[in-house]
Image (cartoon, rainbow, N blue to C red):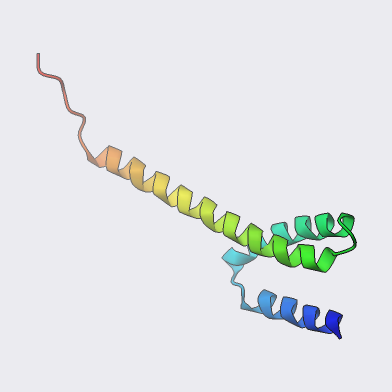
Amino acid sequence: MKKIMIAAALLAIAGASTEAQAVGCISGGAAGAVAGHYAGHHAVLGAVGGCVAGHELHKKQIADKKLKQQQLQQQQATPAVQPAQ
């Protein structure tokens, strides 16, 4: 019964995630499953945790990339100040 509930929860999470969210979830889930397997045969639990962690990491990387783009655009839009001679 417990395995059925976990499988249903994983299917619900997988069905609800968009393509952008799936990138972090898939890579994190795979790493978490391996880690969970070696940490006492908890691969499913590790996959769920890895999915959540991978999604958050991917979201943070995208936000950092957008911030760097905004800073670069601001630098290009602001003319360089010439020192007085």
